[in-house]
Length: 347
Image 1 (cartoon, rainbow, N blue to C red):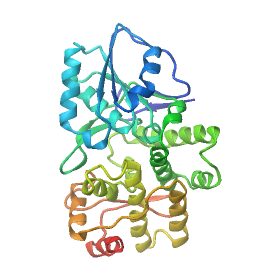
Image 2 (cartoon, rainbow, N blue to C red):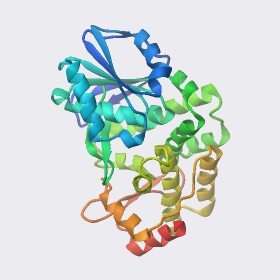
Image 3 (tube, rainbow, N blue to C red):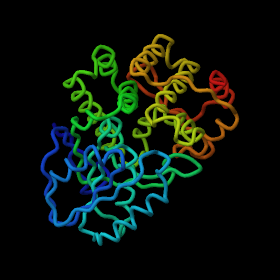
Image 4 (cartoon, rainbow, N blue to C red):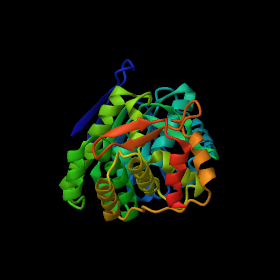
């Protein structure tokens, strides 16, 4: 299965997302693989057996969202300079969303930009993070606030990598699948309700469908000037949760699941989502053991943190909301009192 990215507003940026067994990869240049200390023992040897290149080097970093920062980027860059990579060299991301984001950002910086390839190993990165060229790191102010839009030259999605994925990580990826179904496709949401992802064929179809939905959005709007912002459904809340819990308590997809519930409470308050639809979404999240509760300790602090979100502009908070299942609406004019009324339900 191949899904193509062809960016409407960026000349000569086209690449394929291949969903199949990982093929042999031949490069007439130096290659550096970026991975972490969890993925390396599981999959690095397999990837090395698939690569033919002038020289292959490996950079292994610590696993965890808490290491997604500029200090780690500087370490990776130092290693790449030690390997004497040049502008024709290629970097490969082997790992989940954190590795993909940091590898892409590093590629955008190294000698002002070199090519990189995504080989995602988690469900979340296969259906979402590896597609579309968003790269970056976190800082004390929030999530992914330092970064760049920088597209890979290819993405290779091999569902076999998911066989070693912990159940919790798998569920975190399902949150992003549910996100896309709620935003764009009611029939897809119904499919998720009626079919189990324990079935390998269902899983492969779900990966393909999710990638197609995201690719369609990215092709229209690479740099999130319009419809791509819809992919942040649940994320405005989730990023605050992750920041408040120091990126340790929740996996990204888990925070997104809670964020979806919070966004849906706001949709319900505004009359966009009825309680039956709210419960259907919640039940699907719960089926995959995703968290749906969070206690906000300080409502005012939580609210103020929204203004650090990248989508906020001119002192207005942009919310991505479900307008029923399968449809979306972007709102940036919601009264503060209404927002805080919803937040108090989690206080």
